[in-house]
Image 1 (cartoon, rainbow, N blue to C red):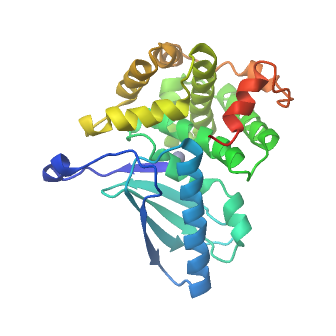
Image 2 (cartoon, helix red, strand yellow):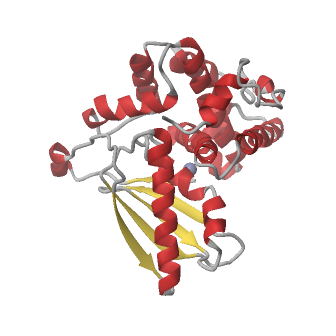
Length: 297
Ligand SMILES: [Zn+2]
């Protein structure tokens, strides 16, 4: 969903330490509005679980501390109608929730895993909306499969139906991809932008796993946070892509980005849409898709 970037006070910067965390970060919970005590307990438990889903699923978390601000939603149609990241120090996520939903309904909801996954990379700026939303949308499905909330088949079907929605929206638009990304809110190109980004990361993860001996998207992100995140306070999509290529000793990210920059329509996802059965673990490409959805060692 929506990301917010809050500039850090300059004087604090030399003292910031971005170490890749093997442990769950310290969490500060803040509540705004009327919540009963059992509801607060349920919401704390839910968000601790979601943070663990991301940290254990990807294999690291870049922050030592995080806050969750929980507010009451104005309607009760779904557990988490709205949420967004705040890139403060420490960073956090603001959730608008309907607290009467069951714990299982909260665990089944994708929003928290999506928002927490945004924090796996630095904010790439507004022009990188497709990039940060693509990463978070990719991981919301992958991590729900790794944690067992979705079966691999269900996660794959969700990715496929997202691609279909992205394709359908793109067909109705005259703008090219970068224009759609730039004017996402006014042209309401959410499906196109989010799922174009998801296609980027699925393709990159797949190519890393088939073209390199050891690299995966998880490991590239972990290495970025270890080696390079502290070097800069301002990032861009281009810089992130440059680092991802350097880390993986490939041109996978930059070659895909070159193609995406000139793209008029939606990425070529036909081969993914044609892949119905991902249960054959000894054959390509299903072996790789199954590995992506499997719990990480
Ligand atoms: Zn998002």
